[in-house]
Image 1 (tube, rainbow, N blue to C red):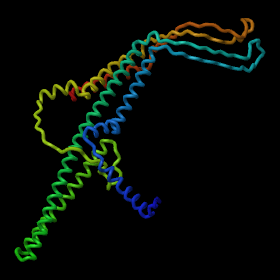
Image 2: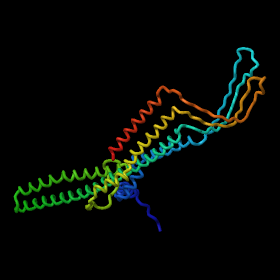
Image 3: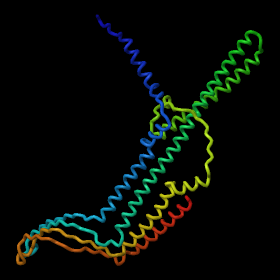
Image 4: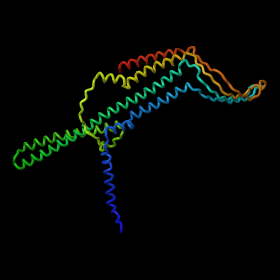
Length: 345
């Protein structure tokens, strides 16, 4: 039994048909509303940006929390001196130390920074929720509008088909002599008036596809292949009578934007504590091990080492009213945040 090779022309024809039908197959991929919402949550640019801001806020919280933990510091010095006059001092001067430093008193600055970082993280999470809700709502509206425009296109095509049949019928009757030329002209005018409405409906349908693709974070490609999916379902009317008082009460409790504005007020209150701490003393304790050189031979050997324990303290007595200016700015931002909260509520 011999296998007859397929002619080269048939192979080329099959490949061309496959390449031509591939975009059509992709365009016919069905996409339900639930799948579109899931795709938007994964690929929408606004949601991705908001999610990255949550990650950044988490990093800021880890940074602020480091103020409560001890830090390990290593320092070193190596210096060669050139003698200008005769001296018994050694020319080489070196030192190295490894210290563990712990904040003892910061006038409330470290706890306030941690509180601000925690509030910022909560605020970013609320903003992510708000962006997700907004994108989901816009996507639902765009999807329903897509279903509506698709139905309108179908109606316009049926109407155009009826007008074409009517024109054909009038032309046949005119040839048969049962109607006058005026009937044919009326049918032509009706058909001509119906064609722009179909073009307008198809344009609206293409715009709906573009909007859904944009919200889902999917590239539409060229204008000839905008319809990258086929919507599932039909647009049906469902009567809904929401209670206004109940809706307002629910929004005041669950709306993430309101809680985010409340967090802005709390952040500025904590920032004022940090500003005031600039004019208060700060104390930190340290312990470690140090290696150093002794330049004077009469005092002892050159190489020395040992443990060190001590305190570091700093206190700005006067900073040129810089802290006063920061407190004024913080209070102004807090008042603005309170006004924004009242306006939103």
